[in-house]
Image (cartoon, rainbow, N blue to C red; front, side, top):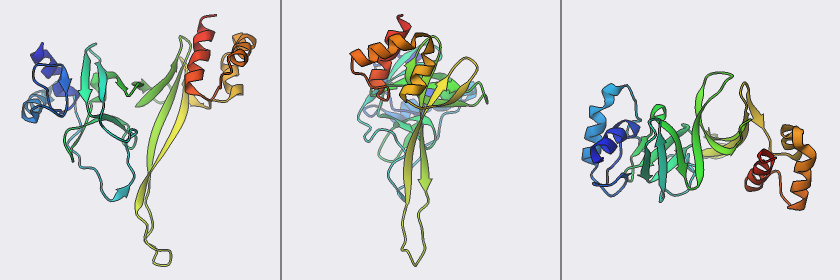
Length: 233
């Protein structure tokens, strides 16, 4: 089982291995994991290279403030792996793991089906409009549609204007909701009108349910309750 786990780890990411467990992260030997990774490059999977965080930019490209958490990564082969020190890089749209103070390693998106980080589920989605594959946070899932959140991080380059003073570059996080149906993929807003239009077949029942339970269409937790009610009708 250990060898099988190491084999999978080789093309998922370069990470350290906690010997004897299906856990990858800060406590083990990086040499063994990296050796396995290097041996599996001929499988055609390309994991991200060692990357040092840019200290010249204020803020962070990562969704979570700290890395002190374990994530469950589900591979395309159906394996469930426990990975330590995992985060989401909104600048590069990648699931990443911190191996040591300065090294960030990237998961191979082609090998990962989904990752559950801090209670949030991240999935690889191919847009039916453009065939582009990106990682999105899964907010709502029903048989008819999915509501996803696109976490994006831009860079404000700052200014070196001598009249206004020098300002450093800064990461600017943004987020957008997306609605995925069978043949469409478009931006979506969590507004009452938009949500009720999406649930038009049961609009009156949904409105009554929301009012009786004092729910908010803009709240993701409440929205999931609304969707559970809707799909149960």
